[in-house]
Image 1: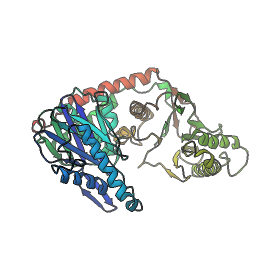
Image 2: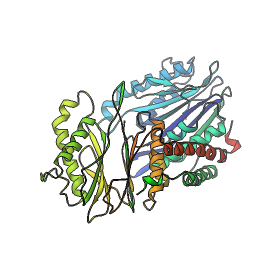
Image 3: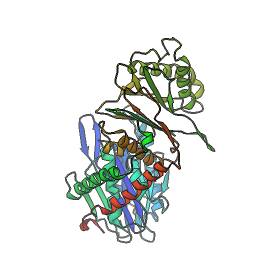
Image 4: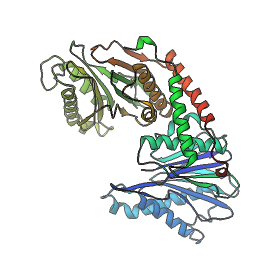
Length: 245
Length: 245
């Protein structure tokens, strides 16, 4: 299973992806689900992926190989806007799916989906979700986060606390708490978590960290949350005695 | 949408169901999804339902009407064990689905699922989940809660805190917090919530309350949790400064 989260802040992007893939009953392998297009001075483009690994890798790898090639249909290095990039990813997904689906379906679901985000000089940072159908939606201040994969367990904490005017520290904390909730309720999602904090106009991906299971901050965060939640629930009022048998 | 939760405690059962049904784009009606079989001295049987309302009402109503009829295949008043009751509900679901599905499918999903719980004298309280296929699983001390409908948003708080040796007050609090998480992330789930607390060997359903949107305890619980969670998240350590852009 997979969980990928993208958050659009006023000051940039917070992207997080787990890296487990369960391709068979006795193998849980690690793959990159937070992919970066090759570096360029005027753009940063990240593609997070969920679904059939063959499908999503075909899309991402072919776009990486087409980067700078001048092949207009697939070259995101010359796209003028992130909207155009989202369209290219969606079109590539449709092509790969059309080519492979009939062969793959007998073995499993061939579909894939993506979060496409980043910044092209002249625009603010933007964040899109590409559906399996190849169409897509964009995040905004009203809908500041998008998720793909195993999305529901980690959604309540974001619905409760996330706001687009947050700092990177608070938003990253919430992103990791959202992963913690998901990992506790679905054993196939878990660290290592790739976490990229991107500040608008920096055109830099240097703040990409891989949070391992034994990472000191991850452990402190989870433990602090777990203990704090226990104390919080205990402190809340009990139901009226007339309700109790 | 629907959310139904059943918790098996060492001392009894905690059952909670929302009561919204969205049968069309402009009507959200209230229905009973926590159904009780007619009263009897030696048994308490509750059936919580999710899915197609026509299907689930047909199952529940026909079983209510067969209660005490002596019709062995459908009369849960003479079942010797809750396992037998679960089997009767599953078989009834299969019959209704076989009869109606081909007519209903062109308009929507005809399937339904249930939580079947209660106690028959001579047994402890038991809790089962009946799948759309009519087969079923039972809760135990290792898996003390079962859910149907919109299950995922409300699962993390239960995974974190619920234990079968809890008192009714703590378990009811967690059940309502699980509903609060679900209602915040899915607008079609919400109060009124039917909540039944059943103490083993009481054979009484007197502790059934309907928690309305403006219920004072519900409001205090939600507000206390929301404020406490904000304070908790704020109190947790920030990510290492080297992670931040």
